[in-house]
Amino acid sequence: MVASLEAHFARLISLTPAELEYVSSHFTLRKFRKHQFLVQQGSRVINDFFVVKGLLKSSFVNDQGKEHILQLAMEDWWVSDYQAYFNQTDATLDITCIEDVEVLCLPLASRERLCSELHQIEHFFRKKSNAGYIALQRRILSFMNQSAAERYNELLQMYPALAQRVPKTVLASYLGVSRETLSRLSS
Image (tube, rainbow, N blue to C red; front, side):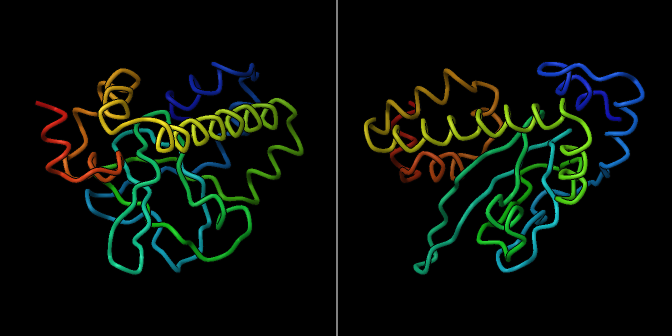
């Protein structure tokens, strides 16, 4: 198992070496180049992705051609089109590499099997899902209640390394502002 995933699990659960080996057998390491898609709108979503190395964006392009970024994902983060993954339907999102990326892929059938066989893994994914839901709620509320400057400052405070790695146009889209507005905020 990739050491970063082992350490990621260890933050929430304890697994024996045999359990770690069994769990790791359900993951596949894949590498993608900058600008490649992990998931593309309209395609089937087979995997949940644990980011070992690199940076990705999860986005939706509306009918007017405007991109809306739902999530940025860097090392030790999980990313997928969860609606399509869990419902086994076509993707409504694109997941694109901002940098060269290495991910560990976990198919839904493997995840379900691991959760049914190992209570610790089920506990882990429940905790991760809860944290993801809380983060999503925080993000939605920030759009409802905070100014662009407040959202930008909060991002810098919570994820200073992330803000340095993301191109300004992507960061502006993530914050829901124009590139020009972001330039004013960052100066």
